[in-house]
Amino acid sequence: MSTLDDIPEILTATLDDGAVGQITLNRPARHNALTLAMWEQVAASVREFGARPETRVILIRGAGERAFASGADLHEMATHRETSEGAAAYHAAVEDAFAALAAVEQPVIAMIHGYCIGGGCELAVACDLRIADDQARFGIPAAKLGIVLGVDELRRLSNLVGLAGAKEILFTGRQFDAVEALSMGLINRVVAADSLEATVLEEARQIIGNAPVAVGAAKALLDAIGREEPAAEVVALQRELVERAGRSGESRERIAAFVNRRPRSNS
Image 1 (cartoon, rainbow, N blue to C red):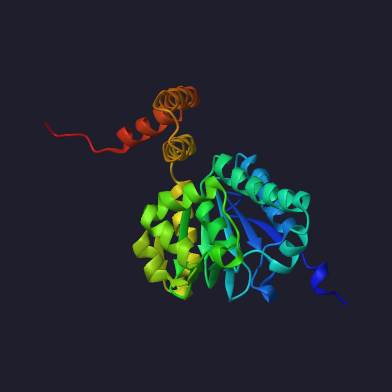
Image 2 (cartoon, rainbow, N blue to C red):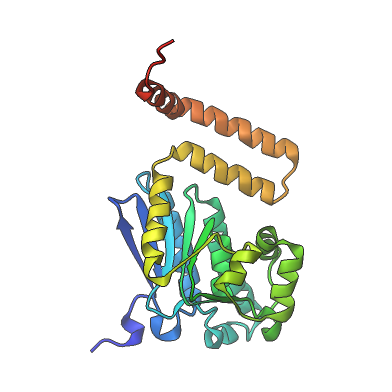
């Protein structure tokens, strides 16, 4: 007989002949509360998909009907925080997952249903795009738990919702619905629950249809701008990416294909 401890906490799969790499947070009985091992596995899975040239988009979702992720597993986190070494190790694992999401060239989409709270909300914020159903609930109750977020986490949140929005989310620790999350800029789209998966996959396929070198360059440059890196470094990165795109030849091929399909002018 299997037990909850026998069930993998992270599941990975490929869709669309490997073009989509799917990571599923798999603790539905606990609303996909994130354990230390799950943070580590998210980082490893993102890097694994990132290393596959056929993978063009990465999708993160939660198992079950109730949650994307309800936050960190507080029972486990309390154990790790009993010592300064344990707290540092836990924080390092969380930061490593966020670093993997930032570094991977492919866009990462969070498919959000139900609870998206605490560490789950921070995970979604670290993704490139967030699409939620109309039943989703959001919040970061760090202040209620006496937790201080990292600088990069605060920057990402503030970049999405603005300084005033980030302060409201963190000062109050309250939950808010998908409509308010959309109005704040925390998520990109809200759809009906029964169309969430189809909508996310359609978004992924639109990205897949574009040139990966251009999509990857846009992500790298926009993230550099969001981090407020020095202008000279951003320009240097842009030049490097332009040269890489030129070496790939993909732009020339796509422009030629577009021109050759265009009807000739009668003039």
